Amino acid sequence: MSNFFKPALLIIAAVAAFMFFSSTFVVDEREKALVVRFGEIQRTVTEPGLYFKIPVLDELVYVEDRIVFFESVDKTVQVVDGRRYLVDAITMVRIVDAQKFRESVGASLTLARDRIDTRMDAALRQTYGKRTFDAALSKDRAAMMREIRDQVRSEARSLGIDIIDVRVRRTDLTPDVLNDTYERMNAERFAEAATLRAIGETARRRIRAEADREAVELVAKAKRESEIIRGQGDAERNRLFADAFNRDPEFFAFYRSMQAYTKALQGDGTTMVLKPDSEFFDYFSGKAKKQ
Image 1: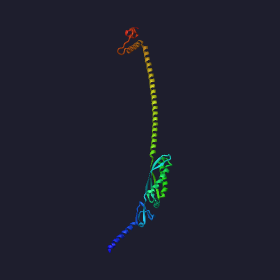
Image 2: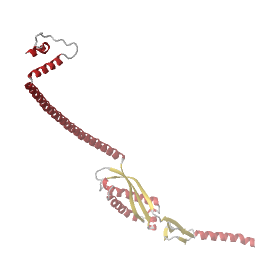
Image 3: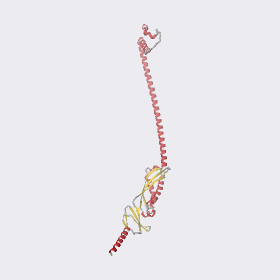
Image 4: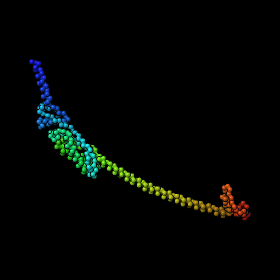
């Protein structure tokens, strides 16, 4: 008899354990749980702990309770001047209404991301379309991110999601616009360099012209002063010669003749054709003394 009851007890214990484990579930602090029966939500569990449900009939749908990050990558936007840019943004969301989240997107974060990303694309285009590119790099950047967040928030609330924040991570030119911008900046730099070279060349010519003018003036001044000094020297020399002549005409004549002999007879092989009685030889023949 005992051999008969032992397997039965084991089966009853196994069934009881199965029923117990099937009727309990655990919710931790990172998630929420929806208890669904025949497709209808019976209750929402938001606090962590151990809970009970009806085995087999009740199903559990776990919903993320932490902050979730959605990335929007390479979104094309156009600013007021017509140029196009690529924008990367990060959306920080949190599921605040698990029941609405399940009813709208089947508790699927992927579907929720697609819905929010579509609205994010439109919000980025609308926000950037009212501003210049410089605004995205200035103090308007914070206001732009708040504006984008508020526009996306209406769509997210219909999904049971709250938009905590939106951050623009990158704003870059598209490849074609980047190339055009580079070519334009390159041309501007070349034009600026040509302008600077022209200014430098003009300054160089002006400085050289001033230097040449000053050099000519200095040389002319030096020549004028040298001529004045030379004239003064010649005048002083003539005065001395005249004074010497007045004091001793005979000695002055002798001195001048000696200078003439020195200049005429200097060097080797000097040949002079003169008459013997020429005045040039007066002091050789002694005529001057006799006179």
